[in-house]
Amino acid sequence: PFRRQNLTIHRPIIYGNTARILTPEERVEPVPAEHTHRWTVAVRSAASAPDSDIVGGADDLSYFIRRVNFKLHDTYPTPNRSIDKPPFEVSETGWGEFEVQIRITFTTEAGEKPLTFYHHLKLHPWTATGELEIPSTEVALQKGPVHSWQYDEIIFVEPFSNFLTTLVAH
Ligand code: SLL
Image (tube, rainbow, N blue to C red; front, side, top):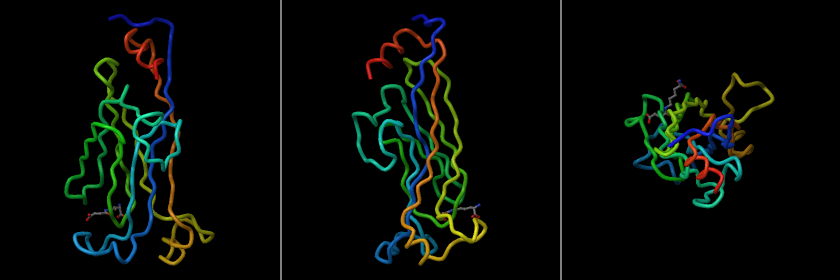
C-alpha cells in the first residue's frame, strides 16, 4: 500500500447532542429519581439532518469509521461507551451537563490514528435571563428539545491509495 502524495481529502461530520425533558411516565424505575432529561450524543455525517435515525445511506460513516468511544461523566456507572457500528451514538438519561470525550477510530484500511473531539453536553435551552440560571421545567418544556451540534471536517492528508478509492466510492 502506498500514500497518494500531494493530495488531501476531507469528510464533513457533525457531533453533538439533542436533549429533552423526561415525561412523568418516563420518570419511573429503573430511571434514577434525580434524572430529568433524556439525551443522545452522536457523530453523524454532515450530509444528513442531526436528528435523523437513518442507518445506511448518507449517514453511514462505517466505510471509514470503525468505532466511536464516548466517555461520559464519572457519575455514570459505565462511563466508557464503545460503539462499533452506526448509528454512532449513545442515548442516556441524566440530570446534568458535562463534557463528553468523543474518540473516533478509523478503519484498518485508513491507517490513521484515532481523533478526539470534546462536546459539552447541553441539556438546558437558552433564556432571555442569561445562561447562568437553569430554566424552570415549564420554560424548558415550552422551548422544546435542545440541539447542540458542531460541524467539523476530518482531513486525510496523503491517504493510502486503497483508502482513497473507498472514500471516493461513497
Ligand atoms: C454538574 N459537572 O455538577 C456536572 C456534572 C453529572 C451529570 C454533571 C447522571 C449521573 C447518574 C448525570 O446526569 N450526571 O446516573 O447518577 O452539573
